[in-house]
Length: 458
Image (tube, rainbow, N blue to C red; front, side, top):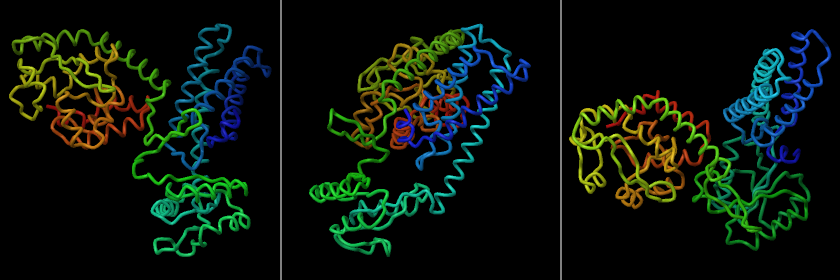
């Protein structure tokens, strides 16, 4: 467990501070309310369980991560979620085992104050660490191998992003050219053994084209012989537009060109459970509204209350999507191949209101409940337009790697109606690559209260 924490940039000192603050505050409030310096055996058991749960949360999250890759927002969000889970656990224990029920303040105050102290310490540690790194401390001394476009990009990234914590000792390459910063060129590849023997380097970054396999293998063997860590930078970085992820097929490494949080079983189960509970709550609480809207649609024009249309969802599987009907009854060919535009004559007066307020989407919560859709995700499209867009818009069908949603990151940013499909795809891909349950909650909030959400809705 310690190795896992260390390898992921987690700080034991921060972890210990959290436990000490929780224990110290709990003990202080216990003495204050119970008027006794001695803690009961049951309270000790509860604190032991707290230590176990907090260790589990720390190992499986980023609540104590303060590496060079850590963003302050992500650190604070992880801390909030971690303390929320810990609070739920403590409340559950107190509720189930009535013998643990003390004064309610014994539970509330220590957690709240400890959370506040943890936030302060993390902010302080983050700022201090960033300050030292920017001023040349706590940096890795690295040697870059290669002089092609790959190494050029690496050099620029390190020099213009000092907070990453890297300091370039030098560059060895077959030849020197003007793109290299002055003073960094140390000679040809043959010098690597000499340099590794004479210098204390933290890491070697191998930025050679993969076609030069023999040289790469030789350099790796030299690094291994000298006991110096190394990393190989692939020369197909132009294909990788986000952070790649590494997996294995037995002992064969597999590189994925984009992060896919929703590819893991844990995330799939979490999102599905949330979809079921959220859709059930909406359909239960808003059932009177459903009846009123259905009556409005029925009285507005002849035809059925619900509009059914086949859409393409996850894994390119076609499903039947439900909406309140907002247009006059049309032939399937017309409804499936004609794009809705502003002031579309097919839209009824009631339909215009439903579209503007997005209330026409309410029946889709049934699609969510049965598993065809999710509450949040890329909006599903008709087969005719899917085939059309995939030819003209790069990576359009990547959207179909996850479930379609009632609302999405594109929609809450005003990309509805007759707006840029390319921009929608970029927003959808950003959502796919950065998914979290918190991100879903933000999108739901913006769907209901955001100003941009209702723009271009017609």
